[in-house]
Length: 340
Image 1 (cartoon, helix red, strand yellow):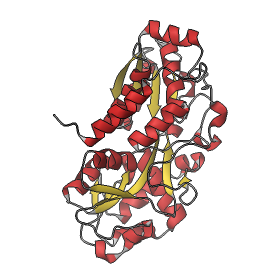
Image 2 (tube, helix red, strand yellow):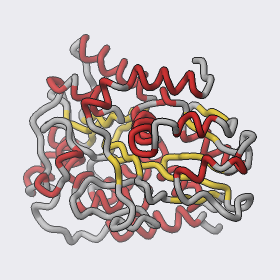
Image 3 (cartoon, one colour):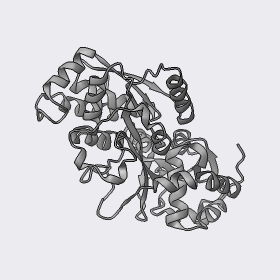
Image 4 (tube, one colour):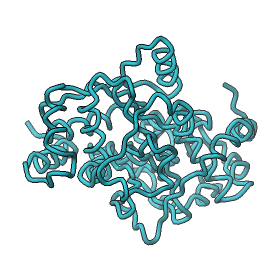
C-alpha cells in the first residue's frame, strides 16, 4: 500500500525527531522530564484545527512517548464557554489551554500559572499579551487558489478586486468567525485601505463560516480563490489536492494565539514539558515546516514560499483588537450584506 505524500513527509519528519540527541536543557532539566513521564499525560484544550493538533501532538509523542496528549478541541466560542463554566465550578480539567483570541484569554490571566520556556528571550515581544501566555500556535493567511482552474493566480491582496473574479468566484470567511479572521479584517482596513471591503464586495463574493469549508470549496472548484489560513492549504496540497497559496507582498496578517499552563493542572510537569517542546526551536520548526504555521521566534523559520526579507507578517495591536472589534465587524456585515 502506498502512503499519501503528506503521510510520507510526516513519517520522515517524525523519524528525524525520534533521534535521542538534543541539548539537555532545551526542553527542561532531566528531573522535569522524569516527573512528566511519571504523570504520563497532559490534557490540552484547544481551538486550533484538529488535523493540525493531531500532527503536532504526534510529533511531541515521538520525542516523549511516555507522555500522552489528551486533546479537547472545540470552536472558539464553545471552548471559552467551557473554560469559564469549569473554572466557575472549580473543576477546570485542562492542563494547557491554547486559544486563538489572546485578548479574551488574557482576561482570564488569573487561571494560569507563572511560566516561561527555556528560550523565552528568543521570542518577539509583540507575540505575547501576558507573561503567563505564550504564542505556541501562530496562524497566518494566504490567498488560496485552485491550480487546476486558475492559470494566473492573484499575487496581491488588491488583485482580488479585479472584476474578472466577479460572480461567486471568490470565497471569503465571515468577519465574526473568530480571532484569526478578525485579524485579517483589521489588516484589510488598516493596511490595504478603508475602501477595501466595499471594493471587494463589488465582486459578489461567496461567504463561508470558517477557513475549513472555504478551503474545501476551493478544492472542489465551487470558488476559485479566497483568503484561507495557510496551514489548511499546506495540508490539503500535501495530500494532492489542487490548491496552492499566494503570499502577498503587502503583508500577511498573522494571529499569535495564547497558550498557558493552568494553576489547577493535574499534570503540571507534563504540561511544562509539552509547552517547552512546543515553544522550542524543534517544536516551532516542526509546526512551520509540516503544518504551514508561522512562528514568533525572532529568527524563526517561515512557511515554504515566504521570503521573510520581502514579505512581512502583520500582528494586530492588542488594544485595537478589542476596542474596534464590535463596530468593525458590524460594518463588515453591512458591507457584505451578511446577517447572522
